[in-house]
Amino acid sequence: MGEFEAIGEVVTGAMAGRAFEPKAGEVGQDGHTRERNCLNCGTPLTGDFCHACGQHAHIHRTLTAFFHDLLHGVLHFEGKTWRTLPLLAWKPGELTRRYIEGERAKFVSPIALFLFSVFLMFAAASMLGGLGGFPEQAKIGMEQEIRDSQAKLAKLEAERAAAENAGQPVAKLDERIGDLKKEINAIEGVKTGKIDTAELQLDGLPGWIGSGVSKASKNPELIAYKLKTNAYKFSWLIIPLSVPFVWMLFPFSRCFRLYDHTVFVTYSLCFMSLLVVAGLLFGSIGMTSAAGLLWVIPPFHMYRQLKGAYALGRGGALWRTVLLTVFAMVVVGLFSASLVGMGTFD
Image 1 (cartoon, rainbow, N blue to C red):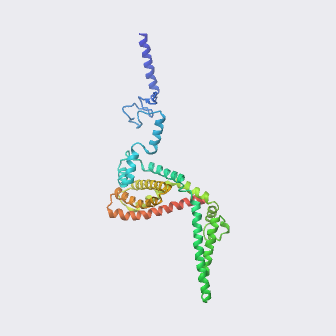
Image 2 (image 1 turned 135 degrees about the vertical axis):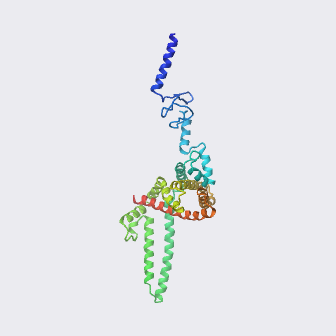
Image 3 (image 1 turned 60 degrees about the horizontal axis):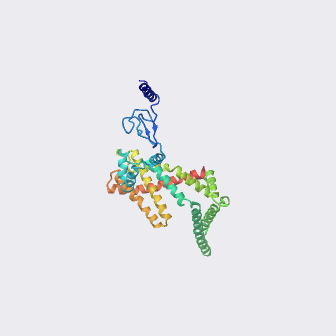
């Protein structure tokens, strides 16, 4: 009887331990746990998932499980990604509509996919050098501008000499020649970083603009670095900038809400970011013509997404695509201006 009493005391002690610490879970040699209660909230388990908090009943404590959770946390890597990306590429309107109407567990959420695609785009640009040549490209552009302006100056001076020999008034030509010389001096000053010696006229503008231009001209590499950094950090700003323009395509419509437009914009930006990655990859292996052809895809993708997401006819989707293309250029301009302002005047 003493042996049975000892066994009973062990069982009683184990049950008491469970009562005081219900969240405990054992770890087997395979790194798996054996749970009776949810390790997250302590609710007794009745199935594969906790019915109170939703946590999986069977959890892992292995290194493989950690990397699985990493991929799952970034993009729900197992099934959602392979369901989302094909639809994003070929049927973006269907993907947008199905997500809006409630099929959330099947697809990667727009914001998760947006963050990943933007990260991938900037990582690819940094590795492949897509964003590294800004200062040199800007300098080449300024040199070309100087050459063009000097050619115009030579032509104006020839016209002035001919007008003077003919006894015609040359006051307007002198004014144009003077303005062109100031423009050339200003560009040369920016190119060489000697903005103080350039005859740059900023009459009527606040002094902080001149200060910002001076900083940009003296250290263009730093400004380029700030632009790239801010473009990555504030890439999400494109979403609130774009949503009002999409709303303008359906003004005062009771069928579509701002949430619908936000999902539309975010999925569209995801595709465009991945398209940039594809263009960078093509360019890095010398397929520049293929990279150039990618520019014709965005309007076609916008058309398909508009037509499918908002259940539009061909005509309605077509004219909205034209407007959306124009709006996209406006948003890019606003976003670029914001980046320049933050990078130059901070």
